[in-house]
Amino acid sequence: MESLEKDTVLMVRAIELAELGSAYTLPNPMVGCVIVLDEVVIAEGYHKHFGGPHAEVNAFAQIPDYTREQLQNATAYINLEPCNCYGKTPPCVDLLISRNIGRVVCAMQDPNPNVFGKGFERLRAAGIEVVVGVLEKEARTLNRKFIALQNNLIKRPYVTLKWAQSIDGYIDPEVNAQKGRGSIAITSKPTQKVVHQLRANNKAILVGRNTVEIDNPSLSVRHAEGNNPTRLIIDPRLELDYSILNMTREQGETWVLCEEEGHRGTQDIAHVKVLPWLSSNPKDWLKKLRSEGIHSILVEGGAATLQKFLDSDCYDDIEIFISDKNLNTGLQAPKLPHTTRGKFTEMRVGADLRKQYIREC
Image (cartoon, rainbow, N blue to C red; front, side, top):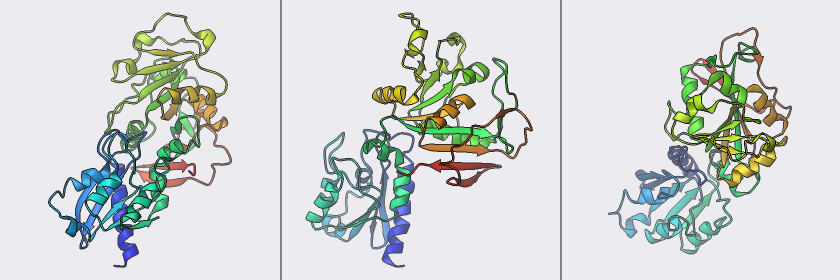
């Protein structure tokens, strides 16, 4: 097997490992590390949670008895440039140098301005061979939220829009569903698992008032690994009955965005944090949410809320799950902007079709 082919195969594994931390690492990146000696994988590790040991640390912890002389002939495959500065943990560059690793293959440079090539410089200065750019596109896609946040490309949280629809383009069989009707599943159970993983992979989940009144959703993570996201409700004039909401009984916080004139002054709502930030331009209050530590949001609905985000160009990813059902009538799915059409990738999830748009980072 040629060297580039070997490097590609092993970088695929590093990216697979990195993705295991998808629900726990943000705002830090997902990173995986594979260490190979004499064409045999001797250690693997990944960044398991924000503030915890990095991938390189977890990998080297598996091989404490390997000597510097042995590791001089080893290669470490890492999907992101090793850090060279102190953060919540010591620099991984120091570890690689101290263990005398002979070669490091990375997918991409770290966009963090505190790193940004400096890790590679230190490795090379120590006599370590460094290869950069193996599966870079795949690595950038994996860590697209981290890249956008680090580069300050967006001043707001990273926004993913998600909805399910019938094959004929409806997201609900009723145009004006009654309050308390409950949700009607359009897609299959395999899709439900994917959606719950999307919830776990984001800091917050957002819905509009109509969705809460009709569905009374829990907005929790039940069919995937991860923690419940912060629930965000758009309720301009605080018209909901918050005492009956299922989501307030779940672990995690519930925040409500309302208009300043709709705020009830100093009156508190049990189990809910009220934020009188709502304005006609979502970018304004999204910036405020970012300053409160909400670095990524999954917008689940309803149709009017999703359309508002689309029309305001306040989105980065779009996830559409299309069932094989025909509803023939009902509430139409949001209308996509021309800039996204033709740029979706498609994959099957059980009987459903998943269409995914990712804005280039």
